[in-house]
Image (cartoon, rainbow, N blue to C red; front, top):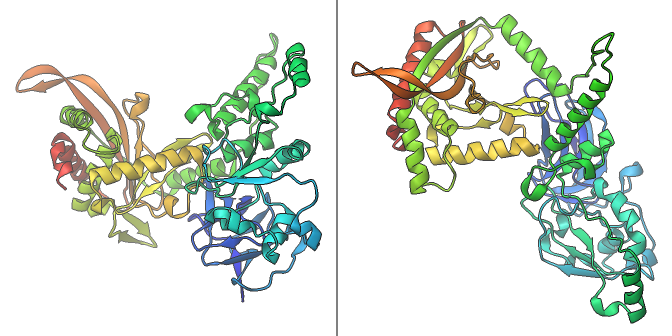
Length: 503
């Protein structure tokens, strides 16, 4: 029995999606909830997950192609069902001799040692290996780790493996399990250096007399960075990585492209005509931001309420938590503000609502979105049911989402269902700003920097640490007095932050 995999609606406004990269290939076993493909939507690059167990039988939408929501993009067969080749996407068949392995092919040695993610890209099993596995000849599944069933082809590394083919004929290839916690669980391969005893005296003398030519080391880069570099024709050797251990991220590639673009623009400057300027096409994410924000300002009657909050006690609490090392995760000011907002929204649920079809829907759960800047715009990942989470749990969820924003691969659940949004620009030193409501939500809180300012306490002017916050509200849902009372409640929690550890 087969079932159809359709293009899902991964965001509230999504009408179509584009397949960026298939993470599985025809013939691969798929488990429910396992990542099938990376999909570009109007919000961000997301991960399409399998809705049931089975075998990926056919891929109908190729990488780089676009299809509307609901269109069939792949076929999933039940386990044990006979698979048939489907166009160019099916695995090629091979003879029994080819399945058993060709003469002269390199010996494969297996090891369970996991390499750092990004150091070696995953490798697709060859056609002969695939057929041999299915026919029971040279059963690779018994010699590989349990993760072998989750292998997938990686087109980004195919070219490298082709160039290394000739060298691999003479040297063993060590195959090991990739880290299962990452999106790829396919085996990786590295060419083993020849043993020192293999070099003859004549060969050693020849090496000493000739300049040493070292094989280029594989550049550490994330899959998104490799794809972005390939699409833009960028040599990753020219890009400076800012990730762990110098790993190149997509943000590094984007920054390199901007620097190159600025350099080209400077060359367009004429002493007589001035700057000729440039034209940049909007990405799908940027287009969506433009449409949604224009519609928000056009259709939602915004009003704004600002309050100044004494943050001296909150600063002391954060420093005390850090000194005592109470939690595994570092507690940031943003985590403290999220927790305080959740408590304030419980007392003023009107701010945790939406305007829908001439009515007001008050949401039972407080799902707070945190606006996170990415290279091409803004994403708002959501922390769900904040009213039930402790400060430490909120910090853990927030840190995971912020880290994921730099790498990409959000799921639709992580970017949808928000009922209230916080936009924090305090880390940029911004003293005051107002944010645009993220529809269909009724409000958004703009958080500014904590600054030292003169304040009056007990009739004396002293230096205090204060923070400006501005809430933008939908006047169809909320009146000014409700917004003001919400900010009073928020101030009460932030100026008495010990209560955040008890709630």
